[in-house]
Length: 402
Image 1 (cartoon, rainbow, N blue to C red):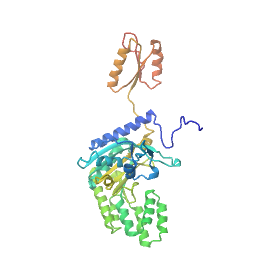
Image 2 (image 1 turned 120 degrees about the horizontal axis):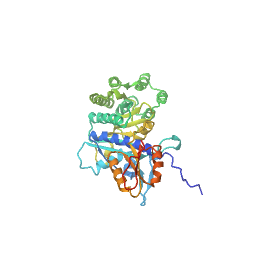
Image 3 (image 1 turned 90 degrees about the vertical axis):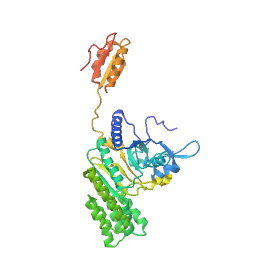
Image 4 (image 1 turned 90 degrees about the horizontal axis):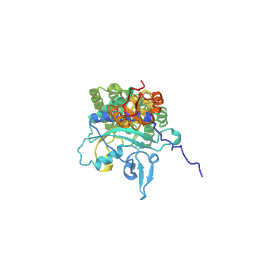
């Protein structure tokens, strides 16, 4: 028999100790409060869903889904994102609700990972979905809210890169017609930020020099509104042009929000989920190599649940934000230790209730009066601001350690 796994955990999952949980809950609370002030109402969905509905619709590859069987032999999945479950709810329990719908969430999600990849198999997300509005105004709203939510969560230095899947789709269809495999290979390089590999694949295609230069040129399409003007000159494809026009409209709205200092246009952005149909974006913090937020438009997803509707949204990578803010000191409420014996119990517990109502952390411990002096001396070492004794029939006599 193999040795029992007493302390080991499965690869990719974590224990969160009290100091980390306090930070995680603060990030969650402040982000959700921010979303609430923008009119987004919180929703909770099950951890388990049916594979044939939410599992298939999630766009997470089959190899990355955690699957299990219920007692009837039906295949279930642990949710791999929150967008597909919310699409299910919007199409069922909220099918009579008028659009647009503004929904927010905080949840743990699960994705199977390679053991050597060093990534989490379970992690937390806090995000929003704006359903029923196809406009550039809606896309700009979720980008601006993502910026506000990052600031509320405590992330100060970051950049949001926005792109549009329609631009690349149109440009590739114009320059690489009837070559879907070549298009997908190039998109995979851009998705992985493998620009060296992208150039190598272009050379392998042996394209005409003007086409080669045009497709290499998109790697330089990063910046402000001027990028939209440059991109409009690159392609005559209707899809590409309408996509750039939509991005220009989003930029104009972001200027009205006053957040363009945090935003750049990056036309190599294609998003990491196949259900994205329009604008996509990612946000990177200055001190972290992984994105701390991602999102985009997914106008076809709800069709799979029988209620076609445009939608856009984003998810904060709450666990990564926790890593980013992990070294920061968390400001804790004042903590006091209250010691009491049988005769002082009622007064001690009354005092504890009063202090808690004031936001103080009050811990009560029954002890003998002979232990009071030792407790007073050790209270500060244990993180308590003071020790308050209640012994005998009298209330605290002022024997409080300063």
